Image 1 (cartoon, rainbow, N blue to C red):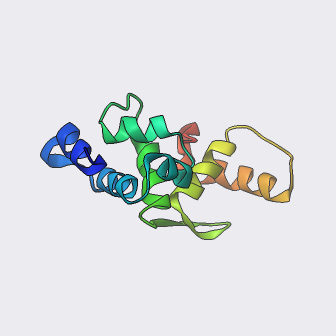
Image 2: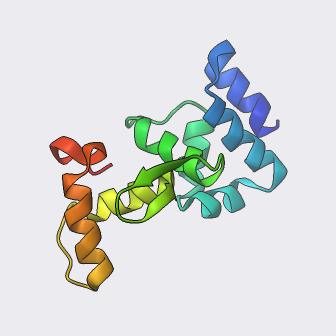
Length: 122
């Protein structure tokens, strides 16, 4: 069964567009290649397509929209970046790392950003 057919069977008539984009990419390449492209595991991709993902979908949606659907946001520091890149930096902003100047700059910026309000680091 194709990933698109699996998604339609699991999600019903209201399959989100980003799930369909994920399923389409799985059918176009493979589940493993899709997982690598979005920076997640193959089991993560499978649970999303099969509508079995137990955690909140917001972070997963941002990763797919940014990596596969080329959706961007305006970052006050980096300019236009993919949503998946924003999520990566927000997650890193959960703890301070004095690795290099960019990490320090992004730690400060992300912790002041409205997308990260309330300690929601993705």
